[in-house]
Image 1: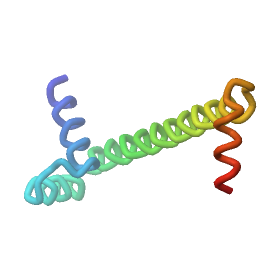
Image 2: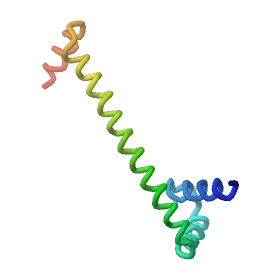
Image 3: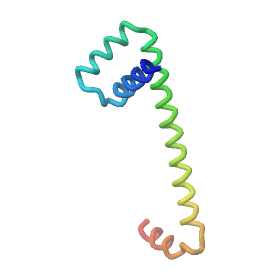
Image 4: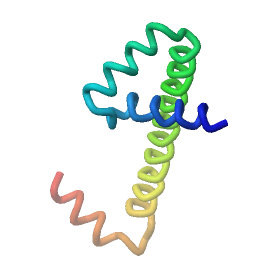
Length: 87
């Protein structure tokens, strides 16, 4: 178990660019020599991409909710008018 946790940490350091130059080069050499490590790294990278996409969608949904509240609620009429005057 400890080995896999260390491996995950090393992959994280490499993908998130926390590793120093020497550690990154050493990790890249390990990727060439260990196909299983390369596959694990690719899956972890894919996971990060999915998380980023989900986070973007969540942020867009939150922004849209705030937009709807500000531009449709009667209590924000004066704010709406000031913003519309800018454009």
